[in-house]
Amino acid sequence: MRQDEFLAEVRDRGEYADQEEALEVSVAVLGVLSRRIRPGEAKDLAAQLPGTLGEALETDGERGAERFGVHEFCRRVADQTGARPRTAQWDAGAVLSTVASTVSHGEVNQVLGQLPTGYAALFGKADLSD
View 1 (tube, rainbow, N blue to C red):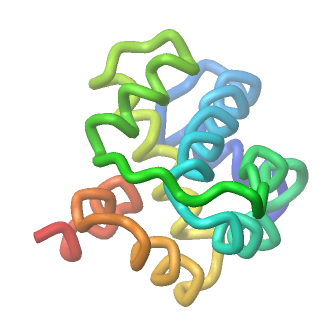
View 2 (cartoon, one colour):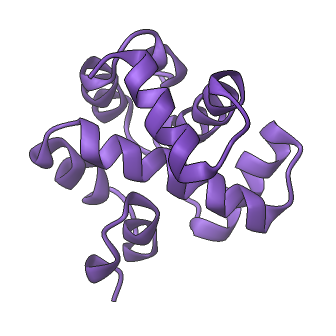
């Protein structure tokens, strides 16, 4: 999938005005995700994302993964985008469900394996959220 196709899918899922808004939200969500997963996993995920979207995933091998839940994840996205936390949850779902439909199933499983079950719904994997 090309970057413009990825952003078109995010735009449709998130009901954004244009590709620019979809890119802004995507970069914010991926940046926060990169802080929550191990750098090696962020690097693996970045390699499967189209265009420059992988650059949003910080892959600094000197840091470890931070530990925070879905509510904190959404709060951090909200801080980045200037949105309310509930809107940030919508934003995260639009981006991460697009990620899940873009990268390999194995990669999605690797990322979800590093996250508490509450994150699965953001990736469009609600059946794994229980």
